[in-house]
Length: 355
Ligand code: ATP
Image 1 (cartoon, rainbow, N blue to C red):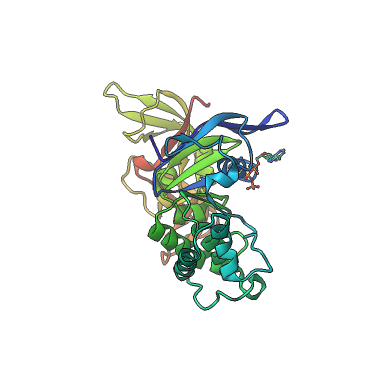
Image 2: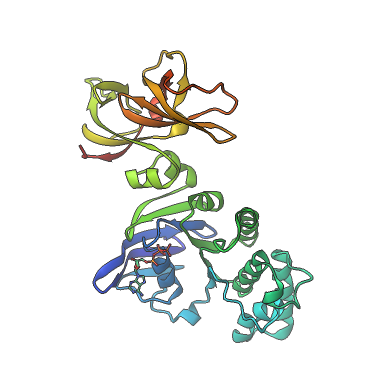
């Protein structure tokens, strides 16, 4: 049994499911992100774990005991909101020690814990400032310190970095990761930012319309997306329609627009119509045709230079493919004929049974 278990967790508003039979397990010390587009049910899920919302169905177990029946204040969880929600009339150390006063932690111990956590989030020297005298990033650290000082079994983060500008967000990502690693608190973070989820998480649970689409390590969900939605939500991709066939030797081939390509051996779905994902960075582009089982020629339709790479739209028999050219490589001209190839393992079946 995992440390935290969500079983058939469901929340409906006016009969419409916002979270629909969600099953997720989280191991001790794990950093899990709930990732998905706006309105997919991430915050509703977090609010049910925190106890701010009652589930319509299903249950939540923490450490093998029911959690959904416990009052929010008795759950002892650390929560950091997007808005930080600091008390403006209290100093940094008063904000942080507030939760310890509620828990009636003896003064000496409380002082030691507040000092330790202020060091952990690197706010030494700012203990006597008020929130208005801090930058956004510093306020965010106070919110994190306030959540961690009560030594919660579970830390819940709701879009904690979304109020910070891009540079500060990058810095705080590494800080958050360092802090979570050093205290080892099991953490669930809500985000709609795929790069943030990739940078911080041990595992990502991708949600769509209240349902779990896929849960896995950042590399698993990126390289082996379980659905067309996941492949499109995590980075850019080319979605293609084809048909999987199997030869007498069991080796699969994929027919797309009357062209035949080798299928990767690790994809075991039944023969028939399939939807496929081919990432732009997995397509090699060159002037000369490579001798390769997965190859097609095309014509450059348009190109954009992004500094670290070229991005091409290439018209070919499969449609218009998005392709990344390596940095430094001589660019292809508009209307130039090019050859594209890829490894069979990179053409991923993301849906079976769709024509
Ligand atoms: P965002 O990234 O925009 O915060 P989210 O994935 O966190 O989105 P939720 O806030 O969980 O999404 O909302 C899921 C769905 O439930 C949405 O369609 C939302 O409109 C609906 N919803 C959420 N709270 C309520 C409520 N109190 N009453 C009615 N509908 C609600």
